[in-house]
Length: 128
Image 1 (cartoon, one colour):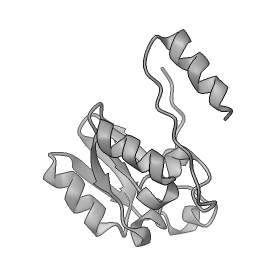
Image 2 (cartoon, rainbow, N blue to C red):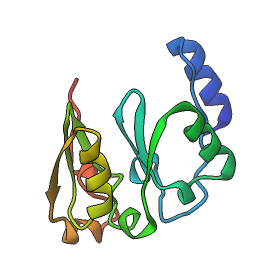
Image 3 (cartoon, rainbow, N blue to C red):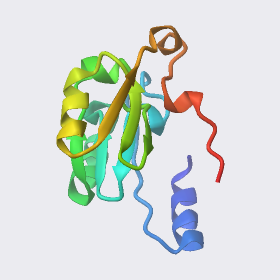
């Protein structure tokens, strides 16, 4: 989105908005390369972002860095519900790091859906 929209969002929501730039077309949307586990902890694939965005994320959150192989399995396209995380299977490093922080991970075989360019989060409909 246009950088001006970020400033407008910050003013309307009366909260800081961090601008992040994606630089790798394999991660075409933020929810394919970053997910929030709680307000202080995120998991993300660093090389989907430009260097400035990586600094912004590392300076504002506790981070779990996802390796390329697991990013390609769309590990970041996960769903977090409280302390439960539903995520694609075949992401053992990410699963271990998340479980070390007290979460329960529910890996799901998603090989067929991964072919379309998404995973668990892309299969959800958020209702508030």
